[in-house]
Length: 380
Image (tube, rainbow, N blue to C red):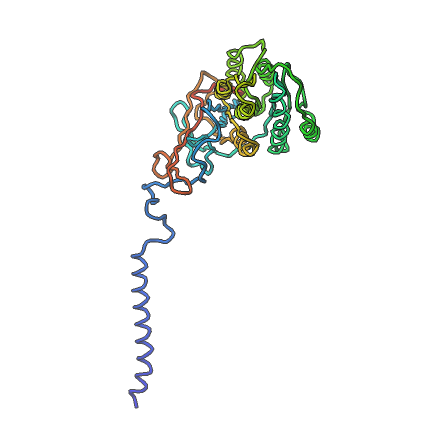
């Protein structure tokens, strides 16, 4: 029958028409769906985005206030390249990671600079470790003999292969333990054989003043780590002289305070002990002020358990910077000081960058940068 032949042709044709129509209908649905590669709601172009950083402790590990954090600006006249090294911290002084090149807006004399490059620098450091090694009271000297080796060993553990360290100790006078050019093995041996020191004066101000003077000629990323109770009994220098030296030496002081340990030890001997009358709280405040005014930090440890976190905080604060470089839009390779500003922005909106930690909590960021620089080979 002819109907059979016609049906054999018509049925496939009908299927093709149906399939074609279904495909067009499906494509129409896909066109109505949002593109899966587009940013989610709230991150579309013009609506902004946010930066997420790791959650950090709710409080700073250091005591008292943090001093001004210095930036470093260098200018290469031949290429007009400006290099800025600066800190970006949260309100508790922790370094804020994950900030990208496009988040930094750099302004020189009010003009936004183009082609800005950003890296995270982990610099080698030169440390002078100044440790208290004696005083008037045998009972407290025994505590020093127990604590100082542990504090010195922890300092060696955080050093990198390109870092340098020198160790000096003080009681009545300053004495060298190890110079910058001596090996780590020597330092380890020296710390292992630190015994309870003999009774002597505690000339802290003289020792710190001399140490800061020795550090002035170093041009590396440098610091003095001061391990001290803050007690001073017979120095020629005054506290105000030491404070002025700390402010002007360009060497941050990171203080590991022993006053809390001394206070606890003194309490075991009762109120009639001669060292019970020492004002350890005042000594702590002086140590905190020295650290703050030098641009460093003070840590009043309660026990050896605090040391790893303390040294990690010191090294992060001293070692890590954002390094920003650009070719200045100013055609001159010399001239008067120029204003400098760095903002953290959302590149999609040009507004201030919104930062949250891993738990979703907003994080405020502080950029530490000097206000001007002079276009010469190096300015700090």
